[in-house]
Length: 227
Length: 227
DNA sequence: CGACGAGTTGACGAAACTCAAGAGTCGTGG
DNA sequence: CCACGACTCTTGAGTTTCGTCAACTCGTCG
Image 1 (cartoon, rainbow over the protein chains, first blue to last red):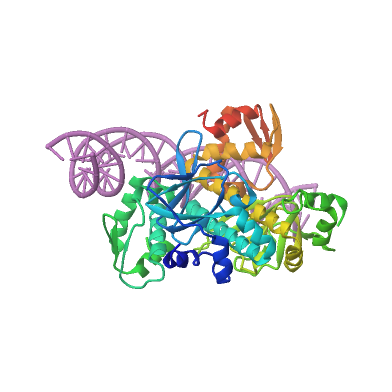
Image 2: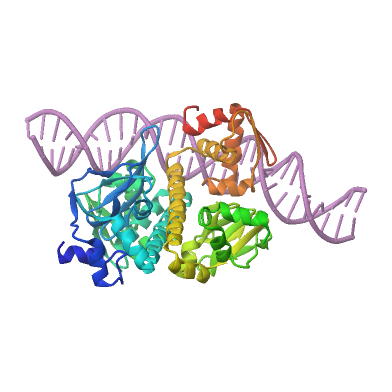
């Protein structure tokens, strides 16, 4: 694994602030594996062999309901990990994973982590922290979904993408709009209309490129201060 | 703490299958504290001093949005715990907690758990398992919320309450309907109408008492096999 | 060039929210 | 003991939002 990839790994909660040597040791000689868009990493109910860490691209987690409709549960990008708990506990995955774009994902052997874990309880804390963070994200998502209208959810998504930028912002949608719509709990049509409505707040969209006149305005929309 | 209470504690994921002596040791000499309905355990953003385990009654976790509306994130009953990760990591709570009914809650000192944790890494696994279960519940909630119409969500809630009972079932709502509505992501009005609609599937409601003619019918509704 | 998929837009309908009124319960205090 | 108010829940009416169906545009790729 090259240095650039390893740098991404170190952005993850589990490896951040961890002793360099120990981090390398846990990763072992594994290299990220490349997945084509649409390729399945594992299915819902599969036993997960290791914990997954996205090095590049995006991976979606989804659940299939009985009637065939699938719900997007989360989407993970570079530096984000998933399936830690399932892997460590040897539990079946409660969601399926599929590459949403071309992606490279590092699979870390659960047994290896488990061995280090008993040796160094600090790692256990990190795993807990990681799980806790996932939980927090889900809670926030749940909150948004329960209470906010579509336009505000979209505004929120854009704000998140923009990070802490200020003033005029140019950015790209990281994956297909259809998928974003699913993540935000709406249909592609609603997403499209929502984006159209945001035009009056200085948001321009052309294909996957988005230009925002004033990100602060959008933050106000997301907060609900603006219609 | 008396034996009945301790039995409830042992139903929790963290303490189930744990060595009896160790379990008692972790709990220490703490006793459950009684909370009146509406009493606040901690606020969103508070530093949580210990992990909380509901012995009796119900505790709601909620998040307040900027505009004062609060969203119910989860509701925990006897044997369920919350705030584990936050307490252990010393992180601020990402939701507020308030007694939804009269409740008794055991607060377990985080430092004490931490100490046992370094001694016995198995405890770390349990905590992870616990966190993972929370996550799974949230994911399921998210899924339901995204894809299911109100009536099905209500049916699902009743089915969950009924457990694995068969045939005719009599039960009580564990807390106010308004709160249930919030948990299911709808207004009290919608909840009321939804319940009314379930009458044609053999559900009778009188105050907090619910009588279900055939729980199997309701399961079918929840699955979507029945309108 | 033609087929295909993604995205947009319009028309329509159903579901859920808001506002408002009213019934029933419970606790409190006169 | 009863009257009052507070609160919860229900029901009704009107409105909004969102999903569905369908047509059409526009790239992409074979």
